[in-house]
Image 1 (cartoon, rainbow, N blue to C red):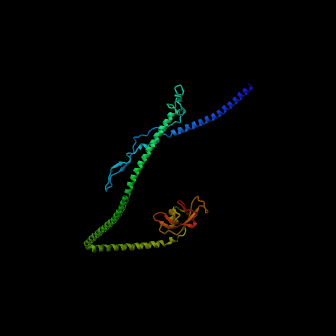
Image 2: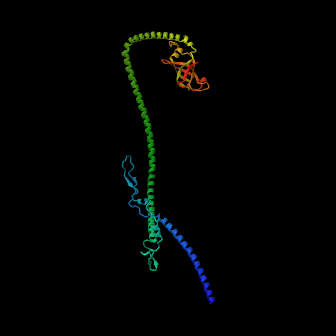
Image 3: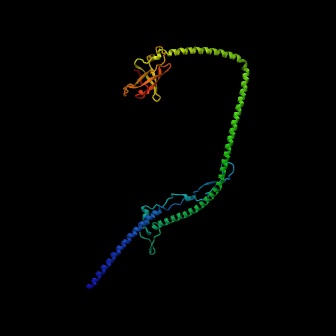
Length: 377
């Protein structure tokens, strides 16, 4: 009895170990199946997002008009045309069509429903096997995806066929264009040659027109000379009287010139009088700078009436003496205080108390400006 009990215990332990091993292996398979199912679900959602859900509008058309009017030497405002893409399936160009969007809880739940369920949530059986085809199942979604992919494959094949047609049309157009290119080059060469001939003819025409203008000018000059000679013949009789009148005018002019020369001699004698020896004037402020050009070294000075008499005499009839005067600027702080430079009298501006002066470079302490004070030292 004890031996039988020991055998049963050992047998129970062996069966328990076997059960534990099967449980561990089953858990591994369950984890594998779960990961595989999750991976397939994620990629089904991603693949579905690339499959177009709706069909393109097959009524779309494309139009590329080709000028088929013959090339003639005349202007054609409205040429005859034809649509080279008349048989082209333009709907193939439609992009960004709506795709399946299954990344939502409801669709994900349906992807996990492998079997058809009844209203109580029980699996519907097809004989001895669970029913997998029906609404609300994963198979329904996969059929939609397969149908969309099939339509896209059909459209892809149609697109390839259209590309072949377009390739043929392109070859025909390129062949025709290549035939026209030599003619166009020859026409361009002809146009250039014609333009060169026209340019030469225009030059010849311009030369002829210039010659015509010159000839007309010569004719006008000859006519003018003829008219002038006629006028000379008409006025020849009056020349003697006119000559006498001119002689009288010349005599009067000589007398005027004599008087003018005498006045000039007197003026020169006065200018060489005592005033030319003035080499100094009383010290003090004499005027101010009106304008200065430090680049060309001259300045325009306005003197007061008293200073003008000191320079030119009481009657203002003496020439400007060759004097040097100082220039200062109140508030200026240079190495010599307010002193900024010296000037030399050069030329008087008539009817004004203005005298043009030279700026003496060696004395410059800075640029002379309008408003600076002129003084005698």
